[in-house]
Amino acid sequence: MASEHSLYIATLRAVFRAEDDVEAIMIADQIKVNGQADLEEDDGDTLDVTQVTQNLAALSPDETLHLLRRARNACIRTRTTQGWDMGKYLDEFIFMLEKRSEDHKGFELAGYDYGRFHDIAQEVLRGGNPIH
Image (cartoon, rainbow, N blue to C red; front, top):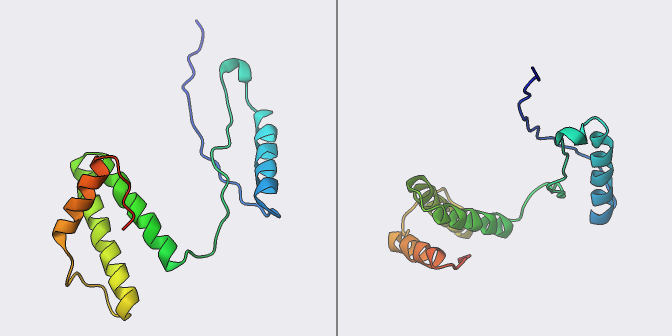
């Protein structure tokens, strides 16, 4: 009787220095080639590079807000209760970060427009991607 083997997925992270994006992609591809030597292609084993990104020390406040807005929109698009709740929470957090950066004080929701989130959600659900 032949032995059944389960399928496993390993997530790997390689951290390395490169002169630019092209060199980084080339290094990642070489890591892939080297790793494939340990796999059995006839059994369907594969190794893929799914993302090559630069490890930035810090995001600017504007970049952070942009990423949070995209995450808020993605949560809304799930059309789940949890996604809605998380999207709403992110929208409140975005408001607090914007307010904090303007007056350099603590985090608070004073002045937050709860109807604004519903307007944003409707735009997202109609296929838009509001980044405001």
